[in-house]
Amino acid sequence: MKLNELRDNPGATKPRKRVGRGPGSGTGKMGGRGIKGQKSRSGVAINGYEGGQMPLYQRLPKRGFNMRTRKKFAVVNLGLIQKFIDLKKLDASNITEDSLVESGLVRRKLDGVRILAKGELTTAITATVTGASASAIEVVAAKGGSLSVTKAAADA
Image (cartoon, rainbow, N blue to C red; front, side, top):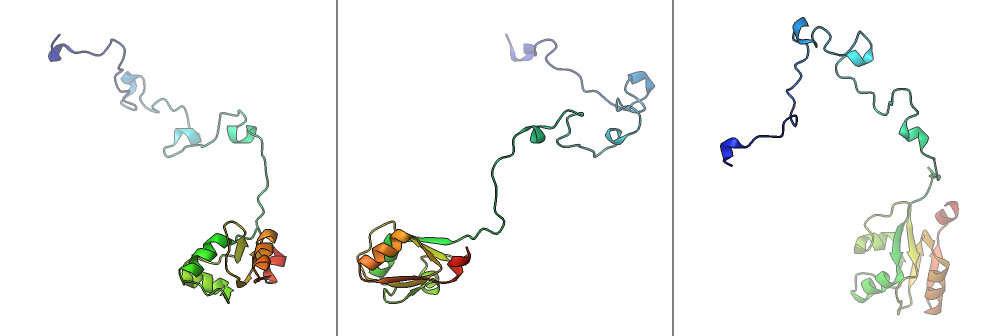
């Protein structure tokens, strides 16, 4: 076998259908699109339409619920706060949402900052934030500090 003898299997390729090239071609005049109507025009794609059959997106079950007014909090763990205090990027005696953003621990406040109890806290801290988990408040109180939650968290 030589390179010039290579051929595709018979019937593997079909010649391109040249539409709208006269009556002798068999696909002249209207080019196999039928007469009039939306589908005979160019630039039409009826997405999701399955020829009268119930479309897939309507056959699938609808589940769940998304609350439009849901609050999105920036989440901070106590372990990270301790790390930033050790690095002298945060003042343990006065931690606010603005100081957390300034230090770089939180990128942006969103609807507020929420403190969670993950990680270890070794310093007594005084913090005022929008939200905190019950276990985080317990841990801070156990170390002799205070963690106060502002009114905005009650609205959430």
